Image (cartoon, rainbow, N blue to C red; front, side, top):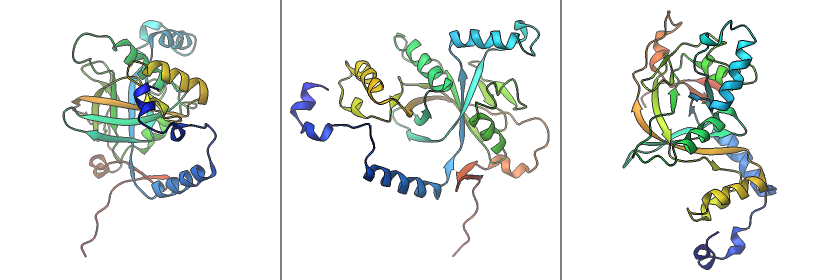
Length: 263
């Protein structure tokens, strides 16, 4: 906490307890019930895993059904997003989403952020793709939401995908796909004391927060660098009209949009 902040406010209101109050629990319950009535877009973020984890995963591949490590492509990973939204277009197009932690995807994106943190060029290359799913792809959303059942979704499933110009997986048949780069490390959501930190002491403050509370989810903010040209999937879809409609999550099930009748 910076001295300027301490001098300008009553610190009694900044005290934080990791134990949720009864009022907080009531707010969470009411909000959860309300959001179930609000349709949410469904997206899958895809990226590459950190190098050190890639090596261990390649060893596990080579000892299983894969005959040669030469047949192993780059290790990709994906995760279905429980929240995703556009937050700005000017001066830069920005999107935001959250991920539960610990998770391989959160680890991968933070590793990419640290890797490019001290680059001198003004713009880093994309290191993830946000695939906004179409109404024809609820199976894709389920696949990437269960890492326990599908730890290697790009290898062990029939999901159709292509590579972007940056070598990242783009899911075929998606409504759209955004090649992005995170603008910095993720932000903890279980304790917001980092909001009051100076930028110089931000990393130390985050480490202190992580040690105190233990995180449930983290917020990622990403800059959109390119909107991808998504290819059509091979084979005939059961309903071609669903390909042009968004996949939504509403009342604990997947659905899509419908027309409002004229009054």
